[in-house]
Image (cartoon, rainbow, N blue to C red):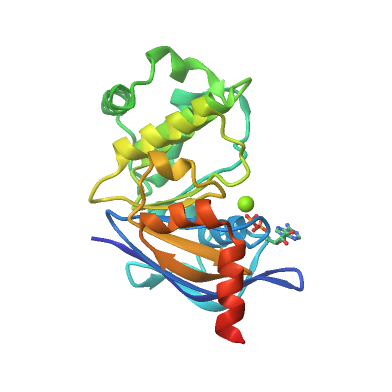
Length: 253
Ligand code: ADP
Ligand code: MG
């Protein structure tokens, strides 16, 4: 069993503090959802945890299985078992998905260790079958001319191949259409299991109808201000975020 512990995390961009003392513990097998209004720091949190170089951590810690990952570069964190699903994945013309994934898997292996081509394709095809992805898909260039749904399919396949301990999925502003929504939720539900912890970041309750979280957290102004189970998401849908704001105001008054 693995744990990802975010402890009183503070992070800034330039002079501006965006994450303001956020704590959260995720264990393997759990799906956590973070919800919250726009501009509250959800995407920043995902980027800081995964090691985006634009952000400065000014306090607190992030521990993967008890080891602080804050001094690690993004690629080291990925090797340690973190996966960040990008809100806006890049296109890589001329590189097929099969070769891209192969490079990604190779990059995760120890130095001097070589990927076995036969075993790699066997595993790739097994994952594709599991996710019901057509074989033709992997000969296409990465994200080139992809629909929103195809980008998500590529991302989920990447996640399946890399077998991360924790996946951070920021779907907030991606304007997932119904097709993409279905692909993400079916993918996550298929990959969900005792060895994977998921942090789903979303603005919309709708996604959580498809991926039922174990825990729901409300993020407000750089911190988690409320946590609960899946019923909290429904309450937010019904009452909106103003309700949380009023509660907060009453608590601090
Ligand atoms: P959310 O994902 O919850 O909508 P973000 O993490 O994207 O929120 O943004 C939180 C705040 O940080 C916003 O006020 C946003 O303008 C600011 N911010 C995020 N990234 C940058 C950046 N690269 N430069 C300046 N401000 C940023
Ligand atoms: Mg966002």
